[in-house]
Length: 186
Image (cartoon, rainbow, N blue to C red; front, side, top):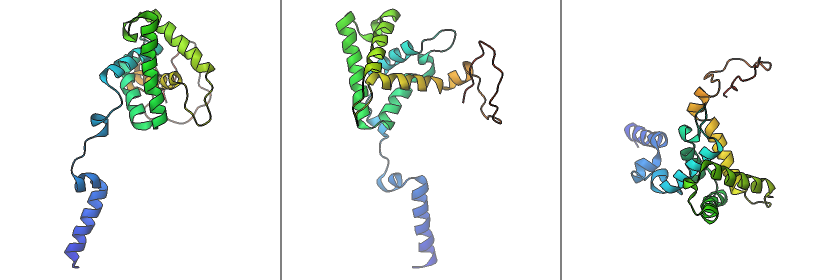
């Protein structure tokens, strides 16, 4: 093997590692998020309504403004293990079924008061739920946690609701606080 062949092999090997061997050696493969996803547009619309009920727009942006539904769908789709994904998806179906059986309407068609009442009942149910050993949390717990996390980590909330410091300075454990001041973003 001569020097040029070694350089070629090293270039191919390191290029494959940097660019992605899958793309170089097998061609373009479809992105999982766009080709196969757990969530339909209807599911994301339902998540939008659920998240907005949990974190509604007031004098501050709501969950819809923050894009929480897309965040929730992406997190469940790409980061959750299958048992939690199944629990979450079955929970979406349960919310729609409960809404239809109780109010004869889809969740998205309910008034704000009806949505709040339904989710408060689910929240109470979730608090009473005892997770089995090795099992998953109650589906509403998963939804509520993701909605709140997605909301408070969104750019719009970080900049318009919280006091955002993009590059924080030193730690100060005793910051002055005046009633009504917004919390600090992290």
